[in-house]
Image 1 (cartoon, rainbow, N blue to C red):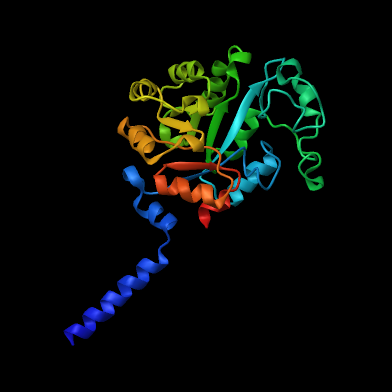
Image 2: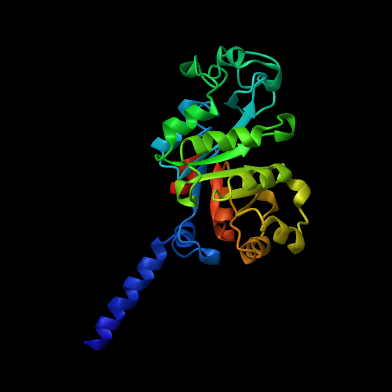
Length: 276
């Protein structure tokens, strides 16, 4: 009787281990103490709708992303708009630099037709509109895009966040990041209770512990190009009490590799990849 019971239990354990995929196991246990890998929709669910539009952000919420990422720039007349490139050429039917165009000019552009006909008429949204429509519904990862082109953008972003009382504690799920690390430091001084992150391109391939420690004095996240990450670098980031949300995974293979490295979150054009 005992042997039969033991055999049944052993078979149950083996079957259970067979059906737990490596990615799912990573989500359960996590490296570096992760309990859940955060799903961040890059420029909204930009694999399924035109990037940085209300349609893409709604799609991200529908797909149950934990956060979506946005890019914030400033128009000639000082309005904060959500668009990635420093020109409007690629993602609208217009032309010119964002900083050389007034808000009304940018607002009149079609930001959806380039992606698919059904998105004709999508507009470039303002930063305030994104906060008003989506705060409390999902987390928002705010990238200050090329802030060196827009003096005072950190203050303007902070003002909009404070205006909506989203700056009091990290549980508001608002995070600010940038490739411009001086800008991150400035933003952190304006929003000390809001988590911040430093973005890192391939020029940070040989980031040192000293540099990571310096980032940790003002940043909560070190978010590099996914190709920079190794398990050793993930361990070093965690050792500095920072988290890492690499960008931008676009295939299941990329997502699975990052999960295996023990990252804290993944920035992706396709939020459903993390749900598979």
